[in-house]
Amino acid sequence: MMKVGKPALAAVVALVLFATGCEGPFKKKKPAPQPSIPPTIQKPKVDIPQPQPTPPPQPKADATIQPTPQPKPTPKRRPTKKVVPPPSPTETTPEPKPTPDASINAPMTNQQADRQRQQTSSLIGAAENNLSNIHRSLNVDEQNMVAQIRNYISQSRKAMTDGDLERAYNLANKANLLSSELMKD
Image: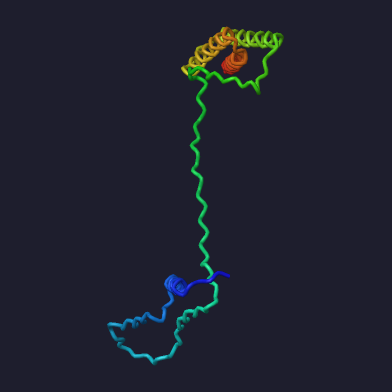
């Protein structure tokens, strides 16, 4: 058990009395305010016992001081994230080139690379074929879609010449999907 000196014990007792609002032995009670206007009708007085304040506990010389419980802090709310809609397919911004990760992307064999080139060329051909088979008037949105398809095709061809076969395939696939949607309308 820890020994506490008399001055420290007196300070803690005074702090407890001050914090709890109890009146210590040195404080004087304030007199109750007198009503300024006496009542005109007198009623019989009934003695109602008023609650008396409890006297502060007298500290013992060997008593341990218990800390007052602190209220739990309220949890902070997380800020809500803003939802940004994805860009429309009619925008003509170029696709960002992904950075290759050696642990994820294993190098392709020559046979796999040839197959991917063939699939990419096939997708580009299908997209161009879809565009050439449109024989109707196009509204502004559809014209923007055609421009986006042509942009994807040219980016895909450039990626093939640069040796980025995965990007070339993805762009050709996008061009083909958009051209198929345009054919449905």
